[in-house]
Image (cartoon, rainbow, N blue to C red; front, side, top):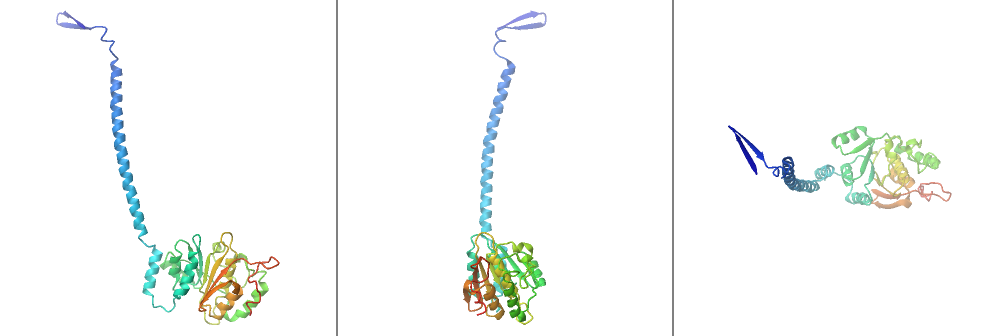
Length: 311
């Protein structure tokens, strides 16, 4: 209710007291504002969830497509190896298919990524690196310029050069010296980095002496002449590295190529031992499996039968 009082041109409106009691205008405005904010928040949440779902779906689709695309692309090292062997299939220097398969089968036996040591940079270098794609493959060569060239041309190759001090013409003398020191400087289990054994390689990168090698291939150094280094030091070093493994699988596969040559055959029988010979493929590739050996006195030794190498 309202009462109007007229006084000349002026009107005075009086509100009845009960109207003032109907509610606080500020409170009504607050309720309205909160309602609008709640509706806006709800709409925003719905939109955001739909947008996030769409974005997530798109991202997942892209990742899945990228993985499938990556799986369809061969690693560069494998592609290089395929191209190399497609171009050089007629080379007479390649290892035979039978011998390559033996080494490949040994690499497959690794329960974890293989540590593969190769003495010699050969026509099979790219192949060995590709077959051991998920492991570590290290190449040792006597030619520092060729090792540098291979690393520059093929960045995935890890190669080091080493200086050999032995000579093929000194084979008998070196074997005699080894036998005299086989329980001392030339013992079968040791860190060659600190050894003075004449036929041991002690100038490799330090880290290589600490690795547990699963497979070792001796296909170098080159040398068919009396003054050439031959495989004496490489085979001895392979035998020590194989027997000096720490932890894990203590067995190491050691392959010696060109086993038909006297220096490789004599060195293999002396340092790797006939008792460990698994197979000799047409006298070109010998396959040994090595682990630590103790004699009856608990001393470490190369061969159980000491007379076998000289027989």
